[in-house]
Length: 300
Image (tube, rainbow, N blue to C red; front, side):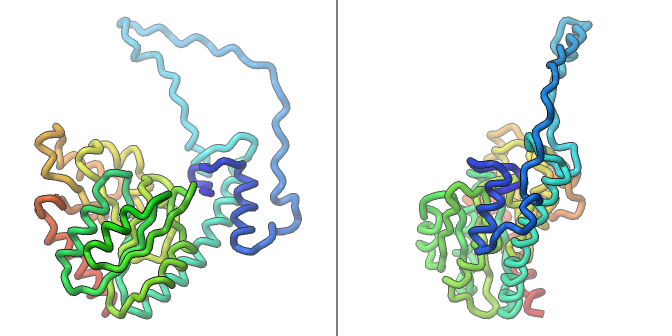
């Protein structure tokens, strides 16, 4: 369940109870804390005022846009107040953060540098990761692969010779700290290793969930559109590095790479940007150097 987007087949309250049960906990007393808020009293529907007719005969003046993310909670759920949404999300993220803290401590003890690779589906995460593993050669590393179903990506990673654990989330739309902790227990991660966490393809929910990583790395392909950082700002605001991938396709996509970077900087002025083609190898050395610097800083 993810209160950031409200996904899942049950109500937010039901999913919160299920989340607590999964962690072996009972819902906190008193039960009134978890009780749904009373439904608002029905009122007579109001007839909307007609939209003003456009002066020039176009549809420019016919604006009926809806904005559900302008409240303090950043989202809306029917029958629930903004305060209640914030309360539930805070509880869930707090529990996730306790797992993330344990992961971070375990990785720090190993002086292992970990990156959380986040992107939309089809950005080229796995192709880039396979090319990265091959280029790193003898560098100790391991991979945690997140998807809703199949072990396709983990199988591709294992073909490079790297150790990989597949984590299938079912209906879940992101990895969380508990999943990563369990995956780490199945990996023989050595001292001074790199840990790559390839998250579920999703530009929304993974932004809010700390996994214990050292940095989120957002991968954005040139085929996705220059406005993606503006449409999904939370993800790029949470990331330390953005990899602009598939730049070999830029001449065929009618895109401007400078506009991609400008939009990334609008969302996150501090974000680093590396232009890469995993297929041709262009920009790969910059990416590898970034990883090596991170590993060296962790060791120091």
